Image (cartoon, rainbow, N blue to C red; front, side):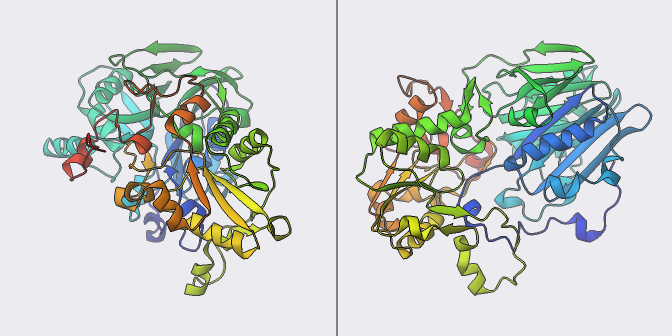
Length: 500
């Protein structure tokens, strides 16, 4: 496994301390993406390419584990982008074999002091051989499981909730690793899409509600598991199907075995995957993510029309919705805001003056297009509202006559506990303000969000949301959690009341 690293590499650095990305800092973040390949030469190289395509799901760190009979299990875990680590021949040569899995990670607000040992995939050595796992999602009863396991003698190496799965597998009495994984995951609550490997098998599992995505693909004579279809495209793999909620697939050579280890439940796929998390070139549930986002813009234009001269996206996540809004409304579409595609960590010492530049380091207004116009800005969400205010100021400074915000999701009023880094509820603008109060706070001429029903129509539910049994997990909008967040309730989190 990993060689001992120098102290400077063992400790998690502050999350991009010189990267003043106010856009990303005021957005919700997926916490990870997973990818696995079986049956191809130099599988780790395919995994590195897949992780590169999934980089939007996690930018803090990444890891790959591979297996070759003559070399055993090998791993590499690094902080930073895939392109900066897993493109080096010297590193990739240490990961031989036809079987490999990988993981990209976005650290949560509570784990900024994490060490390299928190970076997945995690590895465990069992009596029947080793196994590695990579997990996308969040275990909502992890604290209770960790306490129980520690009391029974388990020694944890990381602060990650995902490590509970390895320890539960170690305590299982089942005779093979897939059966032990079934045992372990039956104890787990919350959201999990897991890609795992043994010496001979590639394994994929989704939780019974199917909150987070996982797909199966075919590349040559081998098989692929991925968080999204866009990562299949980069390696030339053919999309086969989605892993179904509550399904486990065990791939051995050319054989794919499907198991159903959990009691069937109604699917509760995360609706925000459609709005923001997934890449627009991915396919979810047979639907193009791009087309869904464009349709959100169409629904927005129908629900919240406004007399204006120009429709502008807030780059880049607002672009498809802005295109749909412009088409439906008949108002011209224009790139009123230009993103600096090469913005990374600034080489300038982060003085207070540089910090205050904030959004301007990342975005610039197309003044010639904006001046004198009544502008509709289309964005994917409003979280804290800090970025929205700064963008509004930039648009007005450029000479816009009016600024109207149209948001391609309902108000985000509740935190997510299923694998998304969400601020505490009191820091969410929509948790403490009405829509009119938010409009006043942001200082814009108008502010409208798409309705929950409108969002459901955009994702293909013609009749809108079934309030008796919602077709998706929309807890961040509705406060209705499909799995009770046991750990957070223990820490004092208050669930939605009837009055709310």
